[in-house]
Amino acid sequence: MKARIIVTLKNGVLDPQGKAIEHALGQLGFGGIGDVRQGKYFEVTLSEQDPAKARAQLEDACKKLFANTVIENYAIELDV
Amino acid sequence: MKSAVIVYPGINRERDLARALELVTGTAPYMVWHDDAEIPDVDLIAVPGGFSYGDYLRCGAIAGQARITADLKKKAAKGVRVFGVCNGFQILTEIGLLPGALLRNAHLKFVCKEVKLEVVNSRTAFTNAYAQGQIIRCPVAHHDGNYFADEGTIRKLEDEHRVVFRYAQGTNPNGSINDIAGIINEKGNVLGMMPHPENLVEPLHGGLDGRGIFESLLETVA
Image (cartoon, rainbow over all chains, first blue to last red; front, side, top):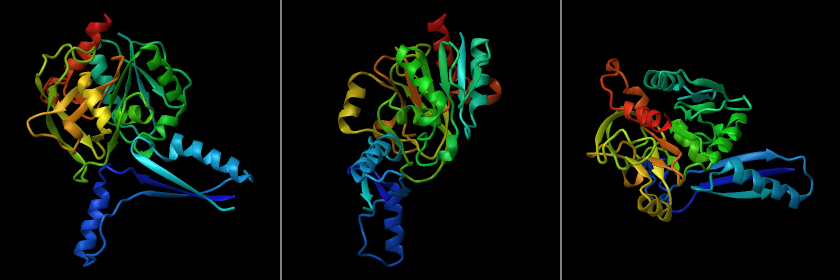
């Protein structure tokens, strides 16, 4: 089973990289694109076939490794 | 005083820390490899700076899962003193021994220079050789040293005098909240800081301001 994990910074956490991208967009003339927040995207393959179990396993993995929950949120998308 | 320095792949300041420890305490530390199961019985475990595991995923994230780190957590819980510098500080926050996180520097640049630090709390086992409020010189070298924690955590740290070092005189090099450069845990046995006091401990370094930390530890162990 394939899954995608998206890790984003929590609201209120400063994102200087997102700000730099936003600034660069402005310089390229993309004035209408704002509020850029940079995150991380992972593709994973699981041997687990049961969606509920796969999700539980990924939740655990997100809390322990993929995300630092002090500063980041995560979202899991499962291909079922 | 017996000490150990943990060596993760990608760390590059382990010899600086070992040199400072040997210079001040008179005893060379054990160098403990990341894949070892156990840290020897020591008075201090030092976690050096560098780029453990290439800073993959997040600074300190992979080191947090290394075999030796399980024993580091166990020994810290037992009250053994732990001192994390730079990447070591990042690792200690990743494994929850210290609150908060270190974000990318606010100006996005790697910063390598000397800053001024205020000793905000000199009543810790790590800082008692300094005077309260003393301003010391200290080098910094990092890309992700921007200390962040939520409002409640910051308030708690401040109220409990757990901010031990603050960037002083307008020298905050990374955008850290409240100019925080180093913090200590509730029990007072785990200290993490971004600056490198181990790089200002002998005349050839151009100053001795960093020695106080190692002298404090030696004093409180002996």
